[in-house]
Length: 434
Image (cartoon, rainbow, N blue to C red; front, side):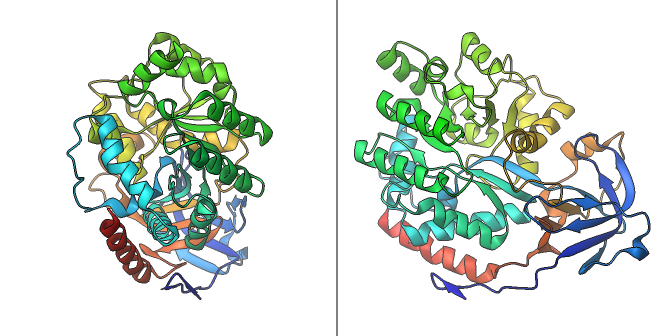
């Protein structure tokens, strides 16, 4: 089968997988268990710990002696549209502030995206997520000149790789009300058949009418809003000037914070009252440490926000272990964060998915870690190893929905070499348009 010039190799899909001789780490309790694990296939499949492995029949058997097995990871905020930006030419004008970074870099890039570029971006991102251990990804997409069908294009790519997803289109008025309407229409068409969120860019590019219509969609489809919040002071100043209220106050007045499915990105430049509004709501905040550093917009402070904090990458990369470690290191000077807090934010996306009934993050999503530490890892020191030792290079196998999508560090579901070649071709096309 060929798709946009890329040949996909469909390989054997197993109905069940037996992981023998594992050291299983319970992601909730950190308890270590020596056991065998039978992994059953399915979107919400289960895992079983058989007492007698000789009585178990499985389609695939992996000997995991000396290996650690735990739940695979989840990514709370990604941008697949940035995948082809690596190495791109410099903008026509050097940005002097955050608004100009958006204007001269990211808003130029997303306007240039077409269907093939989005397909390449999604395929390469899904592969990167899978090989980094993430099997559930929440993405926030923008492509103003290819809106209709953009979410289905991304979903198809992720499905091919075998990575579960929760998608949204970034609705905004910045390209005119007609484009905003197209974003609303794309969102509704997608939500009619798929789980997803209602994406908004940020308060300063979303007027009252578009905001109201987005919240109406949220209520109609029992979903949540996924939006960047006070990533830069520009967002706050715009809200105060236009609406005489701060960003979170405005969102709260529209009912955005009423849903436990709502995700508020960044939340850097917020005051005490905004923090209380968030803490008193069921909404989640997503922290994106490296992106904040890259854009020089400030440092995340969890004070007063409550416990509904998850981690994302904001399109910088797809490595959630790296994201958690950097949240810990950077937070030493700006946040109240220790080993347990960093780990809790790392796994809290699982709680977000479970609370809200999203599919694709059941217990039959697993990673097998070949962790070559010079010191023992056990229940007592696991979090120290998580912060100082573990990395994505230790991920040997990845199981998604009970299917082996990474085996011995190689993608099994698609031809990675062909996809990377396809992505490079589309990257060149994008750069030429820029």
